[in-house]
Amino acid sequence: MKLDLQNVKAGYGKLTILHDISVNFVPGEVTALIGQNGCGKSTLLKTIMGFLDLQRGSITLDGRDIRSFHRKKLAQLVSYLPQESYCPDYLTLGQLIELSSYARNSLFSGPSDEDRQYFHEVLEIVGLGDKAHLPVNSLSGGQKQRAWLALVLAQKTDMILLDEPVNHLDVKYQYAILKLVRDLSCELKKTIIVVLHDINLATYFADYVVMLKAGKIHAHGRTQEVVTETNLQQVFGIPAELFIHNGHIICQPYPASAQSVHHMEE
Image 1 (cartoon, rainbow, N blue to C red):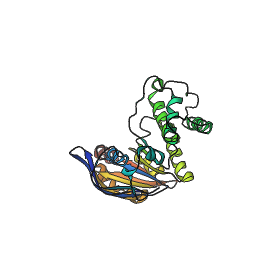
Image 2 (tube, rainbow, N blue to C red):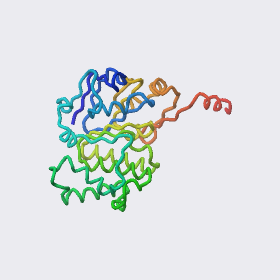
Image 3 (spheres, rainbow, N blue to C red):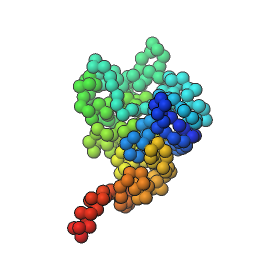
Image 4 (tube, helix red, strand yellow):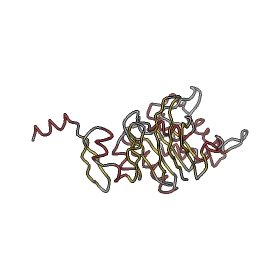
């Protein structure tokens, strides 16, 4: 599934956040969006989903204007996990996951037995297989995040947009979830676009990186071509040393104050 953005300008009302964004997301690959807070990463995902009006430019999905799709049809093609999600107190985790089948079923039909088996498998994958009977709002912060991710995965779409999906998770689940995301891309050829703050997670799991600065694309391309010491300095304003370990780029930032201490110790 091919997603193309051409000269996209968008924002909130009269406030423009994105300026002339042009990028083609590679089908069947994992693309990480990185950049400082407020650079437009989340706004970009919201614009793709049609939650914000285009001020200029175009967004196409397999050559068709993405805004021409009926919302239910779009939900069959693209799933989206925002930074924050909410649900009523009465909703259990199992009931939440069943909502993922809405786009595939008619108004009066519920999930099939095959759907329910898949839902169970997804909950097992995210480590919540024994929690289906519990209210979602009774779960811990990290468990809730995994619950929402399970909902997105259970939607069975060819494209998945994830806005900071591992922010509230411990290290074990950060790697487990992103490994799952990468496996979905590699094995099922799903197109994944994920906002990440941890540069090392981006370099470990992403095939491509789009680096944003002040609402514009500073650089985009294969991960090893974009994540360079020069680009990190220009976008994040901090020097960093990069080295390769087991075929992956490792980023070690060095704030100016830390550099001074380091040189003094030498």
